[in-house]
Length: 555
Image 1 (tube, rainbow, N blue to C red):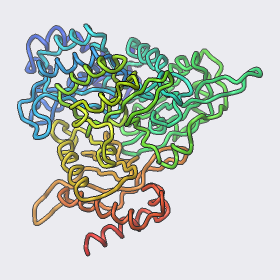
Image 2 (image 1 turned 120 degrees about the horizontal axis):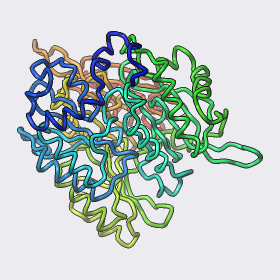
Image 3 (image 1 turned 180 degrees about the horizontal axis):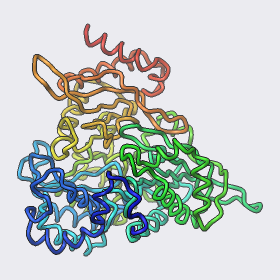
Image 4 (image 1 turned 90 degrees about the horizontal axis):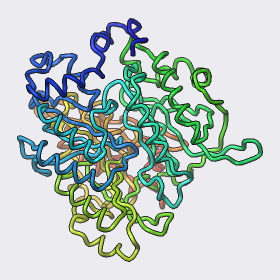
């Protein structure tokens, strides 16, 4: 990091005053011993020390419980052992017990994220040393950079890598190699902003490369007369404020070349990224400003490999583009070895600690002893024998975490919300559970539908790529300021990706679920046979769909 001293503007002075990586010593030797009050500037909500704690996966709760932390655990590719999952559940029950009772999830629970991580809440800084010891005992990343901060975030991929019957290439080992390198290297501990990478070898696009800084997808290329399997690249994607779809970088790399290419790509971002304007410090703005050809050439200059052009993308365009498949791996599916995997739907990604422990038992009792987290906040158990499927389906836990959920439940995603997050404007997790239950009771639909609820415009719940997306806001109703949402429709990824159109702003949350019901009823009445919601919206137009739904509501 020394080579970066002096090159940052005032917005980065706090990183140069104390390298965030160095805060690990304070966490282990001071804060874990003396508690919250020992944290430098703990009396100041804007203390830079709380920003540095993010490098080790520690986010301060909002002002309702500021002395507690959310702790994020990186799970590269979302693949973990049953032993690791069980340990997380046990740690939650011992160290992450809520002071308040959540109406749906009690006092001990965790959240699966849209980047295949796990988040636990109500963590006292005095316990973090013991918690890290628990992680180290079962081989989870412990005290490692990258869970948060201006660093490499968790590297995501296909959750069923290595077992998927229709997989082009198993990329899970590559994810592990790249993740290990960047967690151990200090050369990338002070990037201009966070850096997100997706590496997937499957055809269905579940890696969501279009919204990552680097998105690697399976491909082939003729090299010296032979067809070689590898990866193409999309670069410069991202959600949140100023969302941009990643651009085709016209690059082909072999599996052996991918780690070095990724290092070089990150080095160019580190050295060339905007350090003067933090709001424009992501790779997407560099690629937008300089061009994807410039970026590819700079990476080629930095890399110790030949950077080839071209490559034939292998993704399954029919499923991926039409939206006929959720790309979530929910349900029972045959593996390449004749066994089966079961994708279980975890509503809003929130899971009671006891359920996580029970999931670990099921993974060992029926499967191959692994659990796989998805980018849609769900979980997959792999390696189930065909003869055991009926018995597995009848397990009591599957009544709470179903293998065959309704379209509303299956497509529901939400962020943390005001329960713990200081940026959120509305409560999300409990609200989404209530909305799904109401929609299941009131509206009949059997086609795919992705409904995402985000508490602010940071897009942690990825509403910009949803069929129907919500973004937290405030509005006035009956003379009072109440929680509200902006409503959008028509988002989606694929060969023809498109962000959502925000069509109605400031809808009171109490009224929003009714508007969704009307949108869906209008879709059912006005759609052609077998037409997905996304296809219907594109044909009719987002404004017209919204007007029809609002007209129905007024009537």
